[in-house]
Image 1 (cartoon, helix red, strand yellow):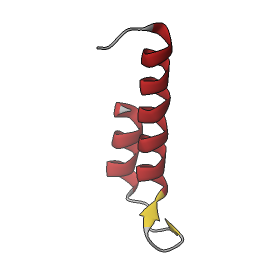
Image 2 (tube, one colour; image 1 turned 60 degrees about the horizontal axis):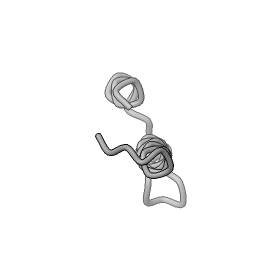
Image 3 (cartoon, one colour; image 1 turned 45 degrees about the vertical axis):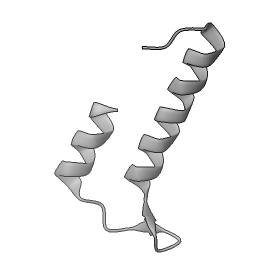
Length: 46
């Protein structure tokens, strides 16, 4: 997640998905959801 954030800060993407959400926000949300699902499936919460 930190890597995605650093790339976003350095390159400041101008394009947006459907004019509302950037690809960086979508990537961070996807990583968060995948990590939450993995934690749920393994019974761990960090």
